[in-house]
Length: 104
Picture 1 (cartoon, rainbow, N blue to C red):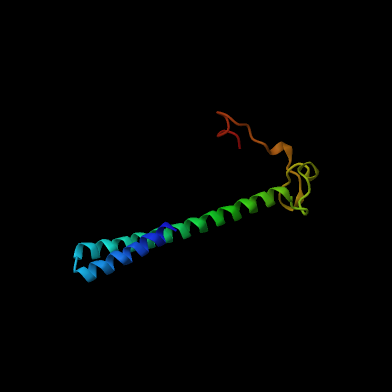
Picture 2 (picture 1 turned 90 degrees about the vertical axis):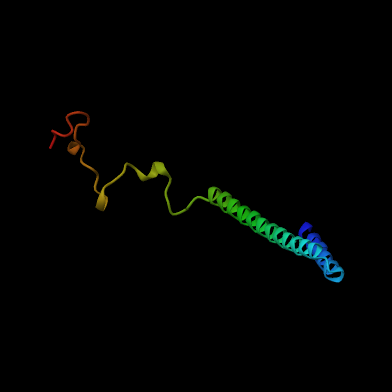
């Protein structure tokens, strides 16, 4: 709303500046028009950002509430498995620490 007021005020100032042959008032009116247009654009962009943020928040809320029915609960999956579903052999673990470079 403030942008529209500044735009209208600028148009009036510019028109009065043209009628009175006052270059200063004419330029001031042009400046007020630009300021009003920038304020209008900023208000539109701010509203779009608010809407996008609200949509993103809603998506996150919906995603957190509805678990994926195709994925079994964590406890039902069992221990991690390697490729082709085979379990990892326990004997292939290497020692950690200062001797890890020596272990083959």
